[in-house]
Each structure stands twice: as C-alpha cells, then as structure tokens.
Image (cartoon, rainbow, N blue to C red; front, side):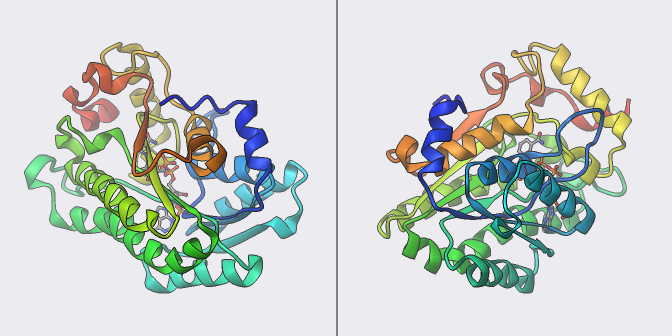
Length: 299
Ligand code: NDP
C-alpha cells in the first residue's frame, strides 16, 4: 500500500470533525533544519486539516514548541489541548483521556505513537542486555498502548473511530540483536494490532499501524546519543543501498502522511488490522539489520 499524502488526503481529512489524541509529540530539532519527530509532524498535519488535537509528552518545553508550531499555521488555540504527562503511568493516561473528553466532548482517533529504545548502561547487547531495559521498553512501547486503548475504547466505540499504532520495521522478521527488546516490543505490538482490530471492528472501530524504517527524529537523542552520533548513523544508512535503497532517511512527515491515510475512512476503510511499511525500501533488501547499529553510532 502506498500512502502518497497528497491533496486527496487533505480533502478527505477536512470532511471530519475529529478529536485526536497523539500519545506523544516530538522533540526539539536534533540537527539542522530537520523536523522534530513523527508525533509532532502528525499533530501539525491533523490540526492543519481541522482536527482538534490533544498533544502530550513529558517535556513541557518541547510540547509547547509543538503547540506553537500548530498555532503558527493559524489554528485556533481552542483546537489544541497540551498535556504534560508520563504515559507509562495510569494517572497520566487517565488524565489524557479524561481531559480530552472534558474539552472536546469526544474522541475519534487514538494515535499510539510514543516509543523509545534504551541502551544497557553497561554497553551490553544481545541476550546479555540488562532486563531493566526490557522492562522500561515494554512499559512505554507496549503496555501503555494496551492500557490507553482500554481507557479510550468506550469513546472510540461511541465515535466509531480509529486507532493507529506506530510500530517499526525492527519488529522483524529480520533479527535485531543490538536492540532486541525494542524489536520484541514492536513485534508484540503488531500482534496486538491484528488481534485488537478483529476484536474492535465488531464495534465499528478500525485498528491499523504503520511500520517506519529509519526516520530522522529525536529517537537517538532519547536513547542518549549525541547529535554527532545521530548524524553518523543517518549518513551511514543513506550511503548504503543495502540499508536504505531510496538513499535518504525518512522524514517525520512521510510517516505522518501514512497515519493520516489510515485515519481517513474515505481513503482506507477496507484496511483492517494491517501495518503499512514506509521504509525507503529497507525491508526489501534486508541489509540494515546485518550491521551493528550501536557500533555505527559510536564509531
Ligand atoms: P522521538 O524520540 O522523536 O519521539 C518520541 C516521543 O515519545 C517524544 O515525543 C517523547 O516525548 C514521547 N515519549 C517517550 N516516552 C514517553 C513517556 N514515558 N511518556 C510520554 N511520552 C513519551 O522518536 P520518533 O518520533 O522517532 O518515535 C515515534 C515512534 O516511531 C516510536 O514509537 C518509535 O518506536 C517509532 N519508530 C521510529 C523510527 C525512527 O527511525 N525514528 C523507526 C521506526 C519506528 P517526551 O520525551 O516529551 O516524553
């Protein structure tokens, strides 16, 4: 499935009176002129198409930057609800759903986008990676998706709404030894997407996901990588055809467009429980995962 993110999508989105929760929004620019991440790009895109958006993240400054970006395009302030919270907490999730309902009166679309990978503080990879990394990764990448979807279900059913999960090509089927817990969390998310889709479609709610390849965002910074390390990783990936045949890192808007397509029933109503891969061709050549990603960033 190709998501072309063009004018037909824009026209489709304008027909909706939507309220969206973005499970997070993105961070400040990692390096020159690059955009700030998938969640931020998606929130801006949807807000520009007339949706009322709830944006969230733990970093209040970055959240405010996202809000200001939205307002800069002439969106009324009343269309934006910014909630600073930690999504791994029940309290944070309750606040997110309840405040959205309180402000906008409904919830049509849930974008489960917040995610992270953590490195072992001893530098271990593979099966020796500390289990505390496993716990932290599963909590944000998987558990929060499960519980937030539960909390939002009642409203999504009322709205006959949509859930879009942000997975990753790291889910497999290729191995991912440097970041195996991350890959495992996304593989589990893919099964969640399929199973939740079949469960919820009986109530008229669609569940789908997008599986991005390498996208230039704040993801590396969140792992503790410096800007220089990120740049090395991006250059490495772009310069090798076995990593990204398209020759360029993905931009957050590339993924935002896929999310918008999946959220738009006029365009994608017959797609249920699927994941759309947007990766510049990486999974077709299967070379990326053969490299040690941690070593690329460190070297
Ligand atoms: P970023 O690090 O730029 O964004 C991650 C976002 O998640 C931030 O806004 C961050 O906000 C939020 N977040 C993380 N932890 C929490 C938490 N505990 N509570 C609330 N918010 C949280 O990364 P991306 O935009 O790249 O990542 C978005 C999604 O895309 C993730 O699920 C990722 O796995 C996926 N993905 C990314 C790829 C890439 O190459 N970039 C490739 C494949 C998939 P804050 O820090 O303010 O809390």
